[in-house]
Amino acid sequence: MKEKEVEHLIQDTKWCPIDQTFRILGKKFTIHILRNMLLLKQKRFNEFMDDIEGINTKILSIRLKEMEENGLITRKSFNETPPRVEYVVTTKGKSVEPILEQMAAYSIFHYPQVVFKDKKSRTFEEFMGRKTKRLK
Image (cartoon, rainbow, N blue to C red; front, side, top):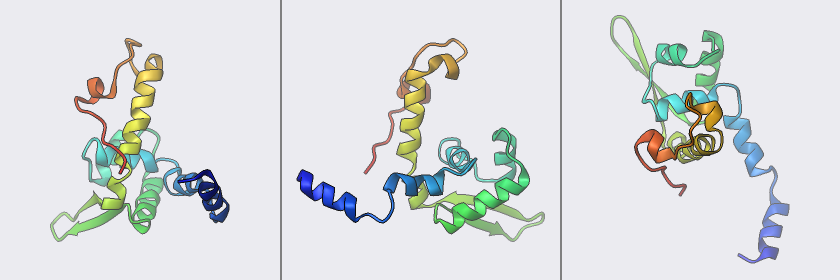
């Protein structure tokens, strides 16, 4: 694409695409919930409560509803006693995974003194045991 075409597209945008992403994903704990769903395979309310530091039940409920409204997750209710609810990442939600992985890879490599007790730098593959997924 030529520079003038790109410039025209930028001038034509209503919102900055990066700002729009942060409007959806940038609310406190949204990324943490997605991280736990995608990387830790969690899907239950209490799993999120146990593993996301600082979150409370009210905020978790609000974020899950917002994520459902934005099409990032779906809520599945099971007709059991006691009632069971699980949250499942949608295709739209799964498309965030490579971004999360790149964010993790950045800190794993550039800020090992904060991330790791031994303060040694690693690659994402060394940390997760697999390569990062690529953006499509």
